[in-house]
Length: 377
Ligand code: GMT
Image (cartoon, rainbow, N blue to C red; front, side):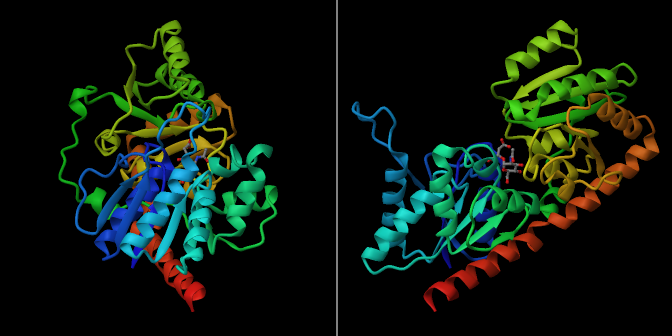
C-alpha cells in the first residue's frame, strides 16, 4: 500500500510519532511518502520505499501570512497522482487535516478517490484547535476524515467535549520500538556527564509554558538538598531563559545542565535514573514513554493522558499539578533506596512494553485496510 503521511518535521511529539510510524511501515513493505516543509528530523537517509516531498511556499509581498495550506494541498494532489497513492494519513489537525481535505476534493474532481485518516495529537485540539478562530475548520476536517484517531482516551474525550463530532474517534496510543532500544549497539556513557555515584534526573520538552519547567527545577532543588543528583534539561523553547535565570539565582548552575535540542535522546536516557514531566496538559506524554523504555521511572502530573501511560506507584508516580513538594517526595522515595530504584526501573521498562510498536502499529494497519475497503468498496 502507498501512503502519504503529512506531519510537522520538527522535534515535537506528533512529528516523531508520524516519522517513526512511516519508518516502521516501510520495513513492513509499505511505500511511504512524507509531505512536510522540511525533512523530518528523525529521517536521516531516504531508503527504498521512503520518499520525502518538501512543501515550498513562495514568499509574496502582498501576503502578510504565506498560504501554506494552499501549497500543501497542491503538493498532496501532485504526489497522489504521480505515485498512485492509496491513502492519506495526516498527523495534527491544523492545518494538515484541512489541507488534506481540500486535496482530496481536488482529486475527486479528477475522478481520483482517496480516503483520509486524521490523527489528533493534543495541542491541535486542547490548545489551538479549540480557539474560536479555528474551531469550525478543525471540526469540519475531523468530521470529513474517513477515520479519526486520538493518541489517548483522554484526548478522545476532550475532543468530543469541545467539538460537535459526528464520526467515531478511535484511540490508538503512541508507541515505542522496544526491540530497537533493547538491542541498540551504541554504548551508554554516563562518564562524560557525571561521576558514577551521582544520580541523573532528566527532563525533555519544548520548554513551552505548559511544560512547567520551573516546577522541574523546584522539584530538583528539593531533591538535591537530600541526594547527590544532577539534572539534565534537554530541549529548547520560550521558557529556557527564565529557567536559566532561576538556576543562576539559586546557585544551581553546577548541578543543572542545559543540553539544548538533541538527536541523542536514547544516549541521554540510557543513563538517566528518573524523568520529570510536571506538564499542565499532556495528551499522551511521548517523552515519558521514551524514558520508560530505557528503564527510567517517571514522576509527572496527574493530567490528560499521562495516567494512561504511567502506572502510579509502579512505573513512577502521578502527582497533583504544581505540587513540587509531592513530586520531590516521590522522587526521593524512588532514588534514596538502591533496591527500590532498581525495581522501579524494571517496572518502568515492563510498562513500556504495552506500547510496543509491533502491537500498536497493527491497529493503524487494520485501519488502513478498513479505510480502503470502506471508501473504495
Ligand atoms: O507537547 C507538545 O508541546 C508537542 C505536541 C506535538 O504536537 O507534537 O505534543 C503532543 O503530541 C504528542 C504526540 O502524540 C503527545 O505525546 C503530547 O502529549 C502532546 N502534547 C500535549 O498534549 C501538550
